[in-house]
Structure formats: C-alpha cells, structure tokens
Length: 533
Image (cartoon, rainbow, N blue to C red; front, side, top):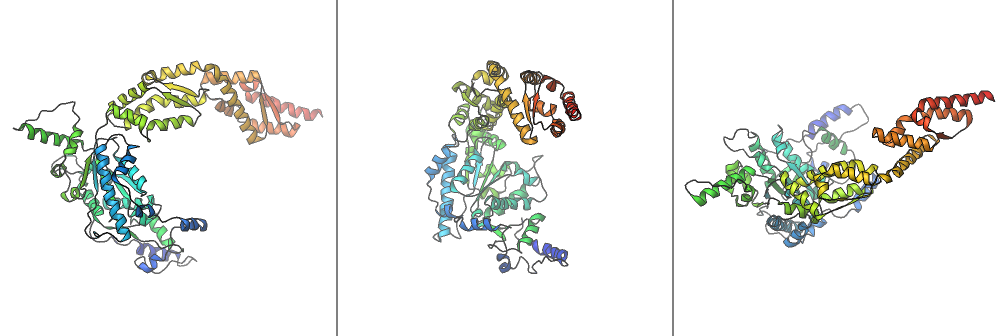
C-alpha cells in the first residue's frame, strides 16, 4: 500500500452514469465526491421512513465505548465463563484491552494527554489450533460492545489485489457495525494464520507475496484512511452514486484506522521447533540438541523473542507493531472434558439443542465425557476435535431418532465406542412405541392433503397396516410413500366431486397397493352413477 491516497473511484463512474442517464428523467449531480460539502449532504443507503425513525431513536452507538470502565480482572472473569484454561493469555489480553479502551474513552472525552504519542497495543496470539484464540477475542468484543471481524491472512496472499483485500478488512468492520462508521473506528480486526505469510529467506515454497501483505497490514495497523468504497467493487460504486439522489444523514467517505485494535494469530508450529532448538543449544552447549519426541513443542512459544519472528520471516516493522505477545497453551484431555461440562459455549450444548428441536433429550455419563475428551485429544485439533468426535457419535442418532417415538436416551462409554450398535439396540427396545408414530405420520399426511385440496382421506385398518409394512420394507417414511402413491389423486377426486359431490374418500388396502387402478375405477363408477340418473 503506497502512502499516496488511492484515486477516488466516483468521478469516472459518475461521469459514465451522467452519460447513461442524460436523455432520461434520472438526474445525477454534476459535483464529485471530492467536494466534501456535497458528499456530507448525501443520503445514507435507501432506508424507509420507518427505518429512519428507528435510526433516530437508536441510542448513541458509542455509548458503551464512552462508558468503558471495566477492570482487567473483570474481563478475565468474563472470559473464564467461555474459555477453559489460557490463564496467561486472559491476563495479558485483559490488561491490553483495558489500556486501549481506557485511552479511547479519554480521547472521546477530550481528556487524553497522549493524542499524538499513544502507541496502540496491537496483539499477537500464538498457539496450536483450537485452543480458543479466536473465541477469546470474539467474547471480548461482545463484552465491550464493539464490532469484530475475522479473516485468514492466507486469502490476501492468494490474490493479486492484496492491498485492496487488506482494506476490505476495515470495510467489513463497517458492515459488522451496521454501517456505523464511528463505531467501526473503535472495533477489533482479527487476522488468523498470520504465520503463513512469513517469508523466510531461502525457504522453498513460501508465498512470494507474503512480504507485501505484511507491508499492507502494517500500514493499516499504524494509522491510515481507508476509502469506504472499494475501487474494485462496482456494486458499491453504483450504490454510492445513487445514494447522492436521496436525503438522509451525512456519511463520511473514509474511515481512520487510528483506534482500530488489530489482533494477529497463528499456530507457529515451525517457530516453536526453532525456539526449542535454540534453547536446547543454549542450555547444553556445543550445539547439542536433545529432544523428547513426545514433548509438545508449542509450549516453547511463550519464550519467543523478536529475533525469532524476524528469523521466521517477519519484517522488523511488522513485528514491531504487535508489541503485546502471548502464547496460548495446548489443551489436554482434562481441559477438553472441562470444556464439555463447564464452558458456556460448549459444543455439547449445541447438540442438546439440536435434539431438543425434535423433542428429544439425552443424558451423558461422566465416563462418556472422559472418553469423548480422550478421543478429541487424539485428533490434535484442540477444542475443534470435540465436534469431530461428537458428530461421529451422534450423526446416525440425529438421522434416525426424529422419526421414532424415542424422546430420551443415555450416552455411555458403549455409545462412544459402538454408536451404531447402541442405536440399533435403543430402537429395538422402543419398537413397541413405533406404531403410534406411524399413525401420527398418516394423520399428518391426511391433514396436509385436506388443506391443499379440500378432500378428506380416511385410511382403513388394512390400508394402514399395508402402508406401514411397505414403509418398513423399503425404509421410507410414510410421508414420502403417500406423496408418491397419491400424487394424482387430486385430479381424479375433483372429477368424482363434480359428478357426485363427494368430499370424503375411504382408502382401502387396494388403493395403497395399486392407487392408479383404484382411482380409475372410482372415476368410472362416478360417471356411471350420472348416466344411471
């Protein structure tokens, strides 16, 4: 990103629109967006009168930022509700966040004495995948009441417009703030997988654009003005020009990144190995290196120094703009078990809600919790491994149970080890209740048919049994069988209704086994009844 402000995209598009509309009734202002007075008198996006009223009634979007008075321990206690362990990371983040937003509060009130000297405490989070790095920052942003945007650094290195893409982070922050530019200026941008854009000299396969991405991010992290409309986004340009024709509150054309907090994170697994070798050599001398193959290298990340990052491939200026650095710890099976039982954001709660959507609940034994945690630990993906394990266990349960009478089940270690066998046993144990479920399914189809077509179907006992048996034999639902069998009944029944006025039709076994033949005979009999008159 150059220091020169990018060209304003609106002059050319405005000129083209003027040319396009010159012979129509649509008028486009002759003034350009560079005229700040004109721009500030233009409309916000097309909001209805009722929406404008709501906007007027909405409280100051910066109220929570202005009133920020949290203390570091209060932030830590809040994070403890959602993220297990990571005590050091919580402490460091809590202090950095309080320092930053206390400065912001003082700046907004005009009481800060560091207007031109304040160094922003951008943060670098290191640690294995799935330990809660993103989750920590999401919950902090939620607590403070500021918009939050997350992106992967790798997406910038894969395009030719790396500068524009990096700017899009800031534009996305405005979207996350529902268009409130003022609020977005105090938001949080989280860039993950930052270790993937390091460009170590001589390392084959590294992304050649990594250095360029670092430089572009560096510009954002310092202080710059970002155009709210992307030069490569034609839709936003068109919208901006059309907005000039509407009335509304003033809208700025750019956003400052001065008070946006930037968090970058990555696993840095190769960096951890490098630090381990460095420390081993320092301790033993003579360049020796004795390592435990089973040792978790990520624990060395807390010893990372600026020289380690520079050797890894980061520009000195870039790494200097993330002065607050903290390493997150790998999660043990015991930690994963605590996440399942104690965290407010536990994935186990999500699965409970999934089943409750079908009126089903389950209990889980402490031994099963430990078994899930052990299997998740073997996945090597931190807390994300919990979802992998739970999905493998519950996938068939979520598919089968909603179509049964089962409303309660227990998850044991046997369920973890043999989910399919336990599911089959559960279904067999409750098979005596299934007949009532099938009857309910038939009633639902009858009600649906009557609502759609105005005719009542009454299934006889033998027809019901035949339909249920076919459902079992073909492993198909009652609903799908009925939809297929009686898809043409509407037309035939309409003919019968015109001939006889009949609206109630009894469905026997023959109608289930051969619906088209039975319907044809009904129609023929209705025609004959007219002739007989």
